[in-house]
Length: 146
Image (cartoon, rainbow, N blue to C red):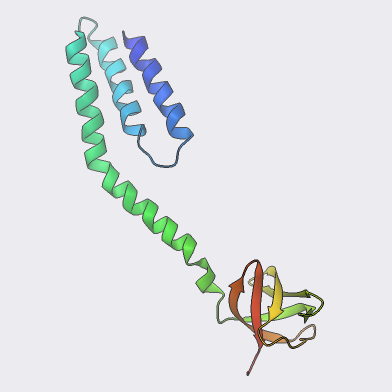
C-alpha cells in the first residue's frame, strides 16, 4: 500500500506542476508522509493511513496556505505596478517620432519602446522626452518642458 501512497504523491506533484494555484502540493506531501509512515510501520491499517494523510494534508494547508497566498498576491501586485517605474520618467528618442508615419522609438531603463507623441508633433533623435503612458503597445511621450 505504501507504493499506492507514493504514486499518489507523485501524481499530485505532477498536477501541481501544471497549475499555479498551489493547491495539491499539501496533499502530495501528505501522501508522501503516509508512504514513509507505512514503510516504517508495515502493519498500519488503511484507516490509520487515511487519518495520517488527512491530518498532515490539512495541517499543512491550514498552516501555510495563507502565507503562500499573501506572497503570491504581493508578487502579482509588484508585476502590475512595474509600469509605474517608467511613467513620468525621462527617456531618449532613438528613432524619430512621427505619428503620421507611425514611426518612433525611445529608450528608457535600457529598453527600447515603440513610441508616439501625445500632441502629434515630430520629435527628433536624441531629444529627451517624458514617458506619459502606454496606449496599446506604444509609449506615449511628450517633449520635456511641455
